[in-house]
Image (tube, rainbow, N blue to C red; front, side):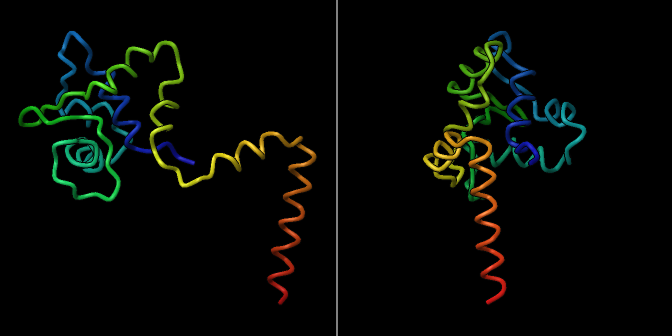
Length: 136
């Protein structure tokens, strides 16, 4: 599964800013920092999808940045703390904790308690059940 673009954009913004810059960055710097991504997609994420004071044109939004001028954005305080803890590791996990994945965490916990053999047996039973439904 590919990493979500909004996390790549946040990483690039955190890499281009900090206390010394007042947590500000230019949109063009983020586009340049992510040459492997479509430039228009990066611009949309920074200027709209990840910007708290942009019009809500997207179903899913992330409160990472605030527009403070033409093409200039500031990282929001909650994500500044994540940047400070970046060296300790695990900060993407803290961001992902706040995003609704639609997966029931109790199912994941239950699955992790199973041994590898039990997991394989469960998958085999599910496959048999699916095959039985196909043959109806």
